[in-house]
Length: 249
Image (tube, rainbow, N blue to C red; front, side):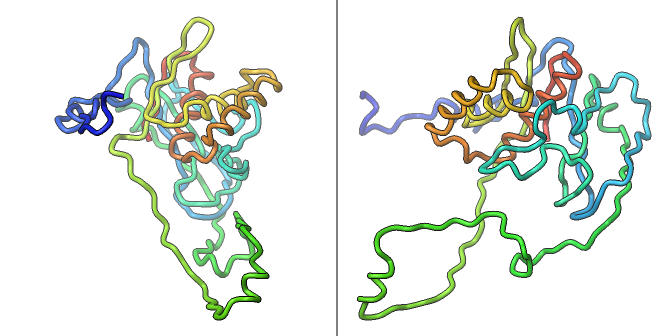
């Protein structure tokens, strides 16, 4: 407890302040390939066709069919596809993953997606669908209202806030004997392991259930999509290519 009551220097402070800190996009491994996410360019519609306007030799291409188990991002519920199958439900929704050993070749690859566009709904108050309902019950509200001297009723709204990462959001997957190493900026490492285990059937069902219980005990299930998506994307490409893969999105 020698640090209690003292100003403690951050171990990563100098590196980040001087630009010397290394992130996923700074690391290099032998025979590494680089990943890219192809995302929707419309907010709502259906995918009619996908055309590759480039020589696919040397590329690893992944779509929803390459996810062995359920194609869903497991946040608080499994209601969002990891890779879009036919329906597009928001702008920049992940559809395909591409990987190649040369970054310039990777980013020059042109993918043409034909859509059947539909009218998007941008006003949540006009929607007939509620994605999440949360009821908070504490004490005897009916009795408190009934006996209160004054009751003030109103509708209250709060703004949406999300923190911003200071690094490119990326993950590296490195295959090793009998397993795989992952390197990336994330907080809920144990919960991400559950994602890998479920999506790629690494563990038996009872082992996955046990891992999920431990993740729930740590309250790590409520983590951010921008952490899960690149991590599972990198793993998917690793499965297809069997080579070290880095995905930066």
